[in-house]
Length: 238
Image (cartoon, rainbow, N blue to C red; front, side, top):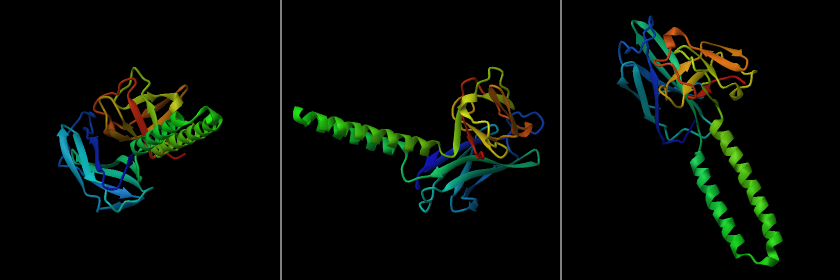
């Protein structure tokens, strides 16, 4: 995920009973802090708000001093039934432009090329054809770079499991290479009932042709994910 300096920021996380894994309120309001490029940064002011039982929202504004390429982890801390826990609930990268900004630029440039072609005569058709090919190649290259930037820092996939539980489920096998290390990674849901929820991965195993992800009981989901829910893996080691 990408944010620009000055953008409004929001994410969600949940707390569960250490005994039953049911959604349970923290003993007191949890806290959240930003870690910029490996160093905690109190200048990124974050506010935690309770949304429902065991469900919290983190909001803030990305500081103006953040630079393109900065990697930011959002770390939440909570105590449930006197048991303290801390976890990375989100990660994003700072950039100077979002994919939507580049898309607008590409569309504008394409419109200009089309207008130029319309004004051309038959005598220059060969030249125009060559120019269009060059422009299309440039657009294709730029689009690929934009997609790489959008997906940098996260592996995207989907739940492929009709019998998923709050602590164990399978992921689309085509989404992840088998040589990555997820021992310190977290999984975040991009759609479905758990949208916005991020959990640290306790263990994982490749069950050909699937990747099974397991969560600890203390970090179980409030609701079992549904087949087709979109997810992203954060903090993996390639």
